[in-house]
Image 1 (cartoon, one colour):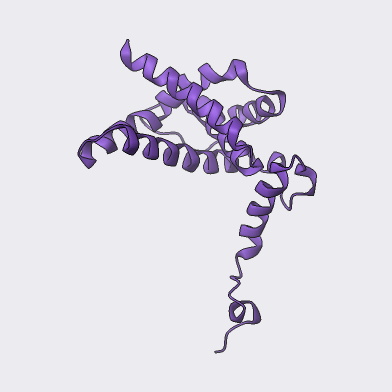
Image 2 (spheres, rainbow, N blue to C red):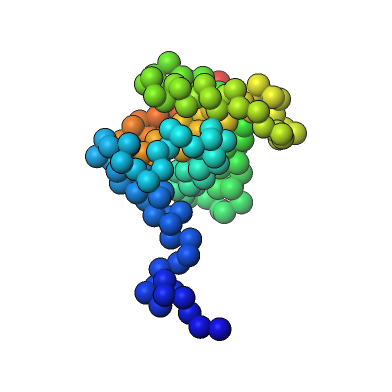
Length: 166
């Protein structure tokens, strides 16, 4: 069985999806979300939360690795404490007042989205708020709004640190 034309050129069959995501981010970085191959506003809120979950965990892992010179097991525990639904729900409440209208729309859609599951360690309300938090992060990431994403992440983590000190 031979290679397809795309494989010969080094282009994966999945590059359409990847291109759509990259196109969404690059088009939105210029403020042109309508010309994106996939407008993040049109994605289902749980898909945005799926992306936002990865964005948030990566951000927390990088921050934890930079800030703490500790054994890997402690780094992992610290990361898990921050990315669990109950912590994200508290952070969500901290950033909700500073959300812009488009972000608040994503927030509302994700908070109200019907999910078939939720973690045993969180109640339904915490899970919905953490889903909303993640969806906003995913939306900003796909829109290429890196500065705004970092602003919200800093505000959220500032809340998490304040809660830890109490």
